[in-house]
Amino acid sequence: MDLYRSRLCWYDYVEVRDGFWRKAPLRGRFCGGKIPEPIVSTDSRLWVEFRSSSNWVGKGFFAIYEAICGGDVKKDNGHIQSPNYPDDYRPSKVCIWRIQVSEGFHVGLTFQSFEIERHDSCAYDYLEVRDGHSESSTLIGRYCGYEKPDDIKSTSSRLWLKFVSDGSINKAGFAVNFFKEVDECSRPNRGGCEQRCLNTLGSYKCSCDPGYELAPDKRRCEAACGGFLTKLNGSITSPGWPKEYPPNKNCIWQLVAPTQYRISLQFDFFETEGNDVCKYDFVEVRSGLTADSKLHGKFCGSEKPEVITSQYNNMRVEFKSDNTVSKKGFKAHFFSDKDECSKDNGGCQQDCVNTFGSYECQCRSGFVLHDNKHDCKEVSAAC
Image (cartoon, rainbow, N blue to C red; front, side, top):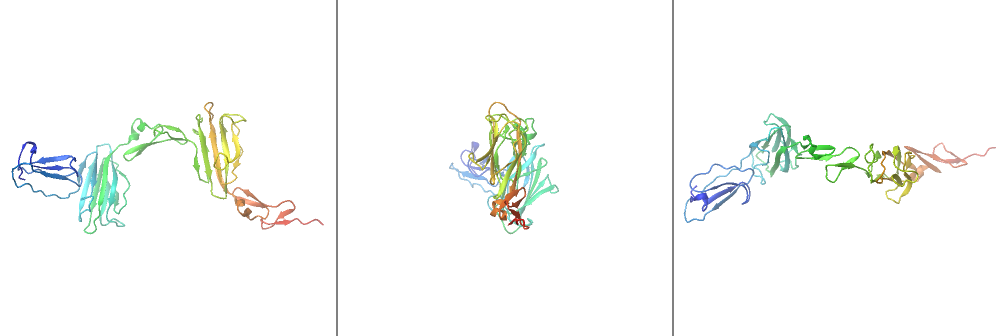
């Protein structure tokens, strides 16, 4: 290096920044004749800027750069890239990174991009990740191809990465972020979750007990109800079951079965506020999905309704509570059965009667069922 020397290298200088633009972190500003120590970037880019503003003439500078990879990485977060990323990686490279975050934490690893020569067993180019600090640690996975691997979480504070490329096909490589993984759910307040806390990589989320759903703040839980159900069988309950239902709830369940099926609803328990009028709290059951569909009944009080079967392949169940008295509510299960009689009368000559899981043909007065169980024959007159 042979540059004009000034205080703070104000006039002629070489400036090196850790990144790809002028405002990236400064690694050093150099002038004079002293050769700087080697500089290693934190990723695949360095900004090198030379400026000359004095009348002094010198030889300038000469520097050699090299794409290196691997090393010990001891910090709580950062990113790692294949050599020369985002351009194609070089052939015949072997890079090993040993990541270590603060003791007592895990290492989280998320892939931002991934493109490595594809092979069924990743025999040529690959990225290998191990759960520990050496090549003998437990293998988490060996990855190649163009699909980003799933997020990775270590069982300790260390993670070992190895990238290998052969001498042939080169691709863009990979970019990953690593970070100190915190289990927010292990804290005394469980991340602020009212009921359940589920730890995820780099974050966490709250969930609720059965019969409840997350409130808009994603922390509290409130009684859940309603929904669009397409299962052939299942159960529905009043919000908060088996505790008392909350006031001012309006829940609508829409049950839909395949064509030719009918839905039956059977109540296992029933207790709401109200009397015969059902003016306050009630359950309303209709054949269809809209509020003006055929009404089967409006129920309240403590008497269980009889089994209700839909007219077609859908059913609407609506529950309403006012702002006064609350009861235990209801629990019901539904099941769907194919109505063979709905198509071509089940093949019956006269009457078809659907039964659960089957059907049967019947004959009108003056006829008896044929041995084929479908046709009807006239009763012979007595002699």
